[in-house]
Image (tube, rainbow, N blue to C red):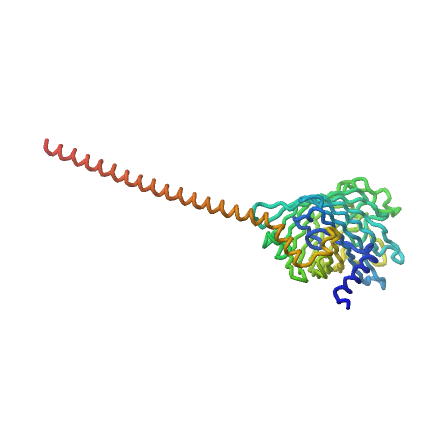
Length: 390
């Protein structure tokens, strides 16, 4: 008889196969929905993640339903112990545009990232790393409404990554806190963002640049992981108000939950809630009948699924084998901790010996001071007696 877990796994595989073109997460490797961990995938490990996010609302100025749907996938591979590659194509992007909402990209843009990470000090709970990300303009349409600004150019960004793990030996089994800060350059000088004949000659005159940030906490459990993220961007220099849709800084809060079906398959759910003000600084509208809508959605729903493909042993080994292998992989770390503890004990003994020597030296100095004071006093008394006798 087939168990419910096996049946659910089979359904998940079918869903993933059918909807791989409809899913993406901003982060497909270790970490959360949007926040990247400073830890990298182990060498030779290959994972893929599919995710879709969507938003919909009836326009306040007309009976028109406005939507924003995005889907893509992420492929992550551990090249070395400290180097991870992530390839993230946004395969489908559909935003309400024009009459009937006939505006979509298939495919949309492609992201390529390289992460240097899994660096930490000895016995430290902090890990750190860096990520270089490049965006390639493979979409037909750019400057998409309801989405972060894109100019249709090869753009790039650099992030610093930090991760605190309550238990550095088993970070995936205990609380983790993540922090990412970075810089993004859209490389868009001279780019035309609109097909409107009235502003056909208007182009980007200065480079659009952003400060990006994200932070989050994850509380893992045997089957469920609970997380909370804050992520957003602040413009250092903005694109033209006359041609760009999304030129305001924004921030989102994302509570999320992940369900581990088994060792190699995980479901993800998250809800983006905008916490930044609903400002509208742009002068360019994609549809005059539905003006009054925010440039960024007030909410979005994220649904995703993550699979581990390599090594293939993950499909075969039992929980007992996993624990044994994990313990073996930690043996070197245990030995290092023991060595450091011994070195610490030896250093403490040496420090105590130095303190004792110092105390002895101070006692000797005090004794010498008293002797000198006594001899001076005695000499002074002898001088006084001699003066009196004379």
